[in-house]
Image 1 (cartoon, protein in one colour):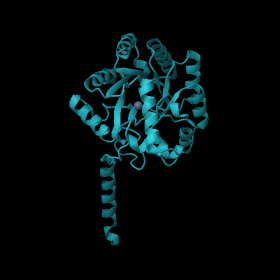
Image 2 (tube, helix red, strand yellow):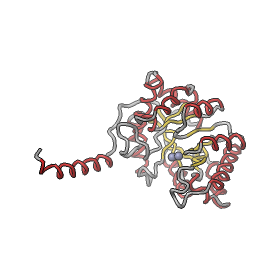
Image 3 (cartoon, rainbow, N blue to C red):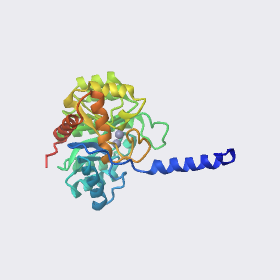
Image 4 (tube, rainbow, N blue to C red):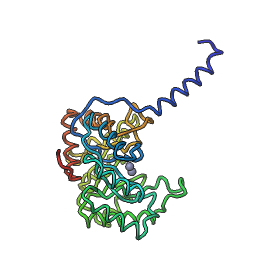
Length: 295
Ligand SMILES: [Zn+2]
Ligand SMILES: [Zn+2]
């Protein structure tokens, strides 16, 4: 390559990188028995029964037997609730995300409550605390609004006897305090677990389930891997949180439930167990906690 060609080359490299970022990762080698414990099908391109079926078919082709699609706001909750009626492999979780906690008025509470009681809705979530977006996004709910909404969702999960699916960003201590003060439901799932090994140990001691996403595969995730190592078999889950958090080496590319085996394999290696055994363990945990039947 001559010096004069260098700028052109750089430009085309940039374009190639941009193309790559939009490109979905290749299919992983199948790993049977998995359930995606947390995904967002609408954000992954799910619109109607056909597009949802094609996402779940793709996941099933690599061993992901079912998915739990999670809502962020009331519009998303209505959609997730409907999507769970379209395909027997799709289950829903409904709640108002902590960043949207300001939207939880009486009418919204009533509607979330009705949907959450439905058989196809297997968890109340995602709810919790998100301090990261306060001050970064103008529409993000305040801490006070988040506490109030979180307490309401905790109570709802207890009344319905359904698991509580927790979103936690930069709020470890307060989140554990609120849960302890309100009294946690029987089943608590720390979705996209992001704490260090001490937070992990505290959650394990309290009997919570820790759900690991693609972040556990990232090069700098030493603490997360330490956390993934210490969780007892029956408190471990895996999720994609798709379309975000695509596992290494596809970080930044679009994520979908079919990418779950990459993360599951990584955790198997971290825990030094056979991948088939790991898949059976996390699959059984998801079925137990969400009450998902074997088909
Ligand atoms: Zn979340
Ligand atoms: Zn999520």
